[in-house]
Image (tube, rainbow, N blue to C red; front, side, top):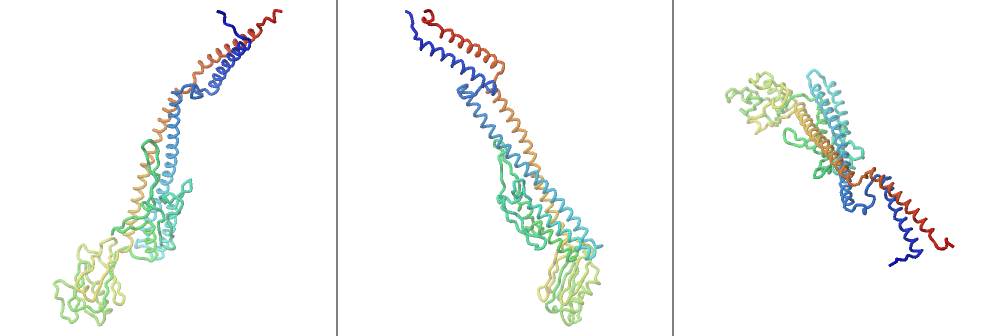
Length: 416
């Protein structure tokens, strides 16, 4: 049986063949120009799905890296601020020790206090540092509001941030905080009595005490409201003093007699005279006294805490009262040491986080390289094979075109 083709069908078949060959040449040309084996999903449906998953993984890694770099920049800035703050407080501590030296007069201490006030304002400025995005480092979640307020002029300081700490995803199942709340770093520092105190209050109190020329020792203040009753006692630094109003002498064994005067002021003067003349027991601090009307101020000659025993005795339950005042130097030094210790602790936390970020950065880079290698294996083109295929497709296209021209010329009319 002879198959008959119409002239129009033969031409259409030839054109279709040429168009098919052109499409294959164009597709191969596009692959070569892009260097990709998979240009559209139909080129490799399974490979296209894999590539989509890999691209999502790379996008997630890029977000991790953005978070990591943001956290690293904030933590690096925080580390620098904490280092400067530590140096600031160490300088203040040097000034405190220098200022409370007995060789310094009141004017010298006042001059030293001026630098501490300046250091206080510098510390406030450091605590209110912003990062590159304009967010405050130590404001918690209130990053747009200045966290610390106050000045060396007012002596009143407050923390206006919150306790929030931001955690950023820097890897699969890996989060890290980008800073510390300001209250943790600069506020809520416990003093020796367990009360919360800010580092700003510590510096302000220290500078104020220096400016007022307060001594670097403990003081006790004894006050007489009325003359004490006969044979009542007062114990100061281990020595018992017995008040005698009728020259009957001491009734307490080993007590030192103090003659009661015509009024409380005279009795205070008599007590001062006796205390000054008394030798303190071994292990107790010698004292210096000063009298003012009905008050006697007793200052330990040895600097430091707990150099004066609390004043006791029967007179305190009658017409006398006493208070022990811990004068600034060693309390301030202890509190400065507490603040420096807190800063070192926070710096250690920041340093540990930076080390973790460096390690996570290397992990992310390795993971990204692995993904990109897998991605390359799936979609990258074998250039040698593609060029060979392209040349073969060009030859096929040219053959199809030439055949079409030859077939198109076959007609009975050409034989007439």
